[in-house]
Amino acid sequence: MVFRQESPANITVFGWFEDQRLSKLSSPSSKQPKQPKQKRACAVFKKTRLYSSNVTTNNVDNQINNNYINDKTIRRDSSPSLRQKFSFTDSEQGAFVEHIINLAEKAIYKFLVDNERNIPLNVVMDFVSKQRPPVNIDFSNADLLCMLNFIIDNINIFIRVSAFHGRWNDHSLQNVAILACEIVICVGGNHEDICAYKENVDNEIVRRWINSAVKNCPQLPQKRKHGDVDDASIGEITEFVMDILEEVEESKKGEKQDILKLALKGNEQIIQFCKGIKMKEKDSQIRKFIQFANLMFDIDLKVRNKKILKIEK
Image (cartoon, rainbow, N blue to C red; front, side, top):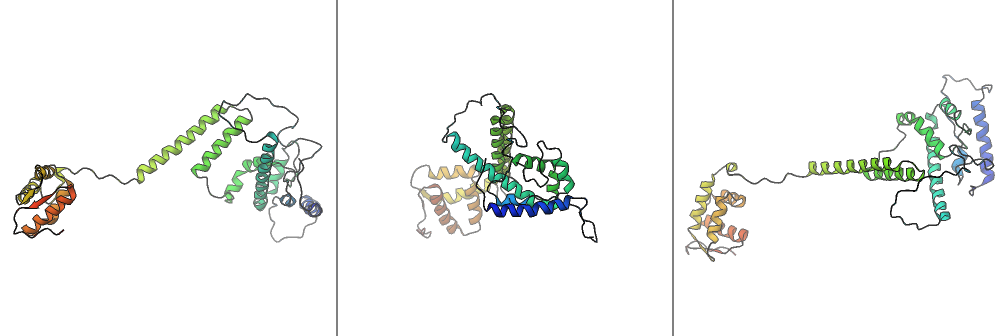
C-alpha cells in the first residue's frame, strides 16, 4: 500500500544524513574521537519514519512482511455463531483498519525512538539477524508485529527504565481480553480457550468488585438486645413509661397499650428518649413524652391533669 507522504524531498535528504550517521556508528574502521570514558553503543532508529504518513516502508516488489506472505490464502473454520451487524463494506472497513494500524505502528515506533538510548546496539543487531526477511538495523522497514516482537523479547529493558505508563483499569483489561478473542477468531485459532479465559477475567473482576463493596459498606446497626441496656434495665424503662402513661389520655383505644408493648420489647427510640428525660421534672417528663410519642408513632395522646402546662404546638 502506498500512502501520501509529506515533503518527499526533505524526507529523502534527511534520511541520507541519518543513514550516513548510522553507517559511521556501525563501521569498525571509522575513526572516532577519543573519549575519556567508553560509552556503551545504543540503538539508533530511523527518524524519517516519524515524519511520514505511512510508517511501514515494505518493498513493493516483494509483497512479504516480517510474518507472512501476502499471496497465501489461509482458510479457517467459520467463527462461532453470534448475532452480528456489518455497517461497512469490505473496502470501507479496510480503510478504517489501515488507518488504525498505521497510527498504532507510528506510536510503537515513536516509543522505540524515545527509548533508543536505553537499548544496547548489540541487542538490536542480535534481533535483526534472526529476522526473515531481513530487517534493517535502524528498523526502517520493520512492521508493527516485528516491533512488538522486539519489545516483548526485550521487555526487561523497558521495565527497568519505567518506559511504560501506568496500568490498565478494569474496563481496559476487559477490552484487551475482548480484542484477544477477536484476534484469535479472526486467525482461525481455538476461540473456545481464549473466550473461556476472558470469562475467568470477567468473573474475577466481578468477584473483586463485590469484595470491595462488602469491605467498604458500613455495618448495619444490629437489633438491640435486652442485655445491651446500660443505664436502666427493661423493667425500669417499662416502669418509667407506665408512670407517664397514667397521666396521659388516649384518643383511640389501644394507643397506650401499643406504647407499653414497644417499651417491653426494648424499642431503641423509646429507650434513648426515656434516658434523655429521666432527670427532668415530672411535668416536663410527661409533656415531652407526649410530644415524642405523638410525633414518633403518629398517635394523639393528651395530658390528663389540666394543671400540667399545655403542650406547645
